[in-house]
Length: 327
Image (cartoon, rainbow, N blue to C red; front, side):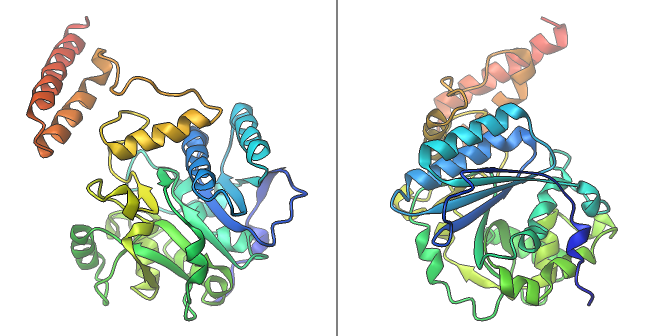
């Protein structure tokens, strides 16, 4: 298979904060976000730094565009914690042709596929989705024996594994969540993971249930290092002390509402950031937020919190009526 020409990846802009810092003993952590998610990436960065205070980190933000205010805020974080932080603005033409299954997503999610080509001069990096918080020691990832494999990740939830392995016809009946990947760059490039993923450009979207995650699972078919779930916790019932990285992977996001202990922790790190803190736990009681109260009511029902369930469904009904009546 022909290697992807590095010249095909066009870096439109690159910002570096604290570029003079020696990063040879750093752990490298990367995110792909559009400008709307710079705040979330910043919260994830702060959570890493606050829970690994005796360690060195370098951070990378891969994006298609950014606002000056977002860059200013990230520069403030870099200066406060004395870390190197880079923003790469990538020409998205290279990712044209990749499918989008979920409307709220963009092709920025596919930038993780080309990160090892751009970061080729370092050994390993940790990829994190922006809707994550770090709550423990990340340095233990450096003890991983890759056994020649491209990266390490955590198995998805059992119901997702069962359904998606059948849908994608995976032979090894294994399916990982690509929201957290600890990547060995040499192995990734040697095994041509980017090139193999790019063979799915232009494929029929009906072949997939998700975006980059489905493609990477098709490429790897279980041939990765599977990590303990503490590195990508997706169930709020997990005790905080047993969690290194928590993933807000569902539709309940902590910047929309605060419903559990992990939402409160996310907002704690937001309050440390240059972005404004969030003080209201629930969305405004305005008609445009009526559907949020339906989701909240469902959440409380699933957790046997009947009083809050009734109140949430009450506001869902009232706000929906107000919206229809234009009140």
